[in-house]
Every structure is written in structure tokens, then in C-alpha cells.
Image 1 (cartoon, rainbow, N blue to C red):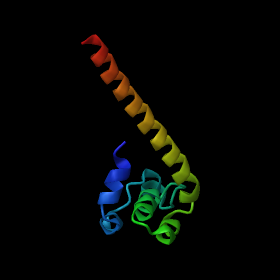
Image 2: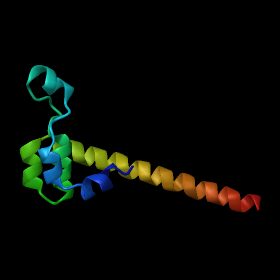
Image 3: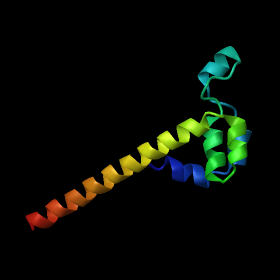
Image 4: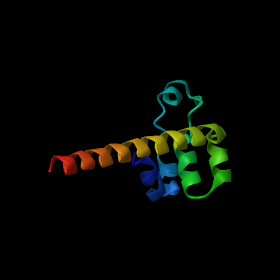
Length: 92
């Protein structure tokens, strides 16, 4: 739930200096379809769409899907919290 917030706080330059953690790339030397996605998300959250597309063009497809899933999970968590508070109120 907090991953988007973390990516907004971490500077993209910090991510760019780090070595890739992709196991596929480490074993084969070739990028996998997901390589660069973390850096692309970081670029999007910092307002750099062109930079995000440079890292991974699939961000165009993945970002809306993950945004939908994140908002849906957030609504579910808020609803559960409100229901729990309501049940505590009714018990008292």
C-alpha cells in the first residue's frame, strides 16, 4: 500500500546509481520484460513521462492497471476500517 509513497520520496537518481536486482538479467546478461520498471515508476511519480518511457515502454500498460488495483485495495482497507469502527461503536 505504501510503495507509491516510497517511490515518490526516493530520488530517481538514487535508483539509477544502484545495480539491477533482476535475476534474469544477472544470469543471461539480457534484460527481461520487467527490467527498468521500478525506475520507470519512479520517473512517473516525479513527473517525467519521457524518462519513464525510456526505461520501460510497458509502463503505459502497467501503470493504469496497478493504479486501479491500488485504489481498489485502498477503498477496501478504508471500508474495513470504517466497518470495524462502526462495530466497536455499536458494541459500546
